[in-house]
Image (cartoon, rainbow, N blue to C red; front, side, top):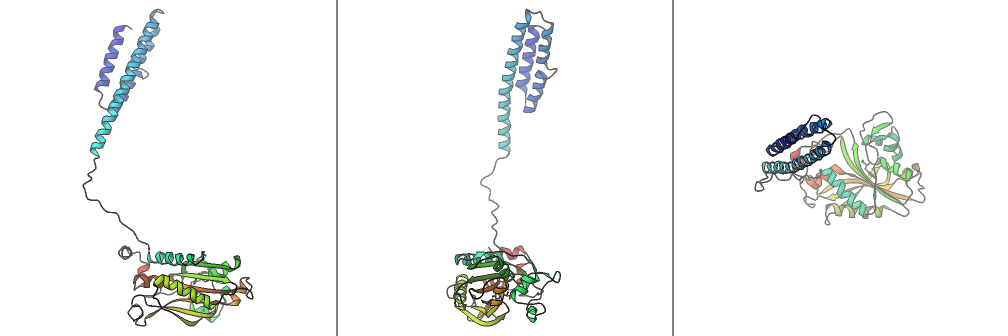
Length: 340
Ligand code: DAH
């Protein structure tokens, strides 16, 4: 090993670095210099054959060479990195004058929208929102609502039974008993959710939605129910909405009423939405039958309740001018786009 050899290796490596075209080339050069059998590594190995006097001198020279090569490699690496980045950026240039594709704006499904609206109004009035199971027991869906087995009033709801005791809930009223069992009066709850009946035509779907309301407190009466529903309807359909209460029958309320509102599309004059009657039937309601309170462990001498049940599909159809309930369940994007 001599000076000349060392100088040759240096010139060769510096030349290679200078001519490198890519970071990959540099990796190759590093291996050629510092790899196991690389040129600089071989120089170090060659020290063995030198005389003890020559070793320190050559050692220092090799170290100096290493430093020079390493530094040159480093600055070339930075240079190549910058060049590669620049080339990439030039290639990916964005034309900011090109027209954009536009942002697609979605919309809430009419049912989700009506649940949101009614929930907001009820929460303002102090109601808590609860949920109940869609697969329900015969007890909560019927018996605890004062609809015994084999009673003719079951016929009002053509039900999907899974077994004799388990069914798809036919009314959100099922959550009333569940909540009465676990809550201490006074309380106010609403429960929006899916319900199921064996019914299917332009205004009935086997899956539909209801929103149940229940208030239990001392000294409450039909008058509170009427005023509360009047406020609720006017907030939903507008201040000029007329409300009509008609006597009705539900096994779980006594007395029971049905509630109609003036048609929001013709304001009571009569049109095809209200089939010329000027009014639309929207919900059932009433004062909770004391038997129902007692069955769920609430003292009916001390407490009274009132309850209401909205059909949400109908409410949404009226609000959005939808004439066939099936549109709500088809997930046709053209229909949903109109809800924006
Ligand atoms: N569950 C009844 C139905 O599906 C609606 C209803 C009527 C609910 C009166 C109530 C109520 O809470 O008090 O037809």
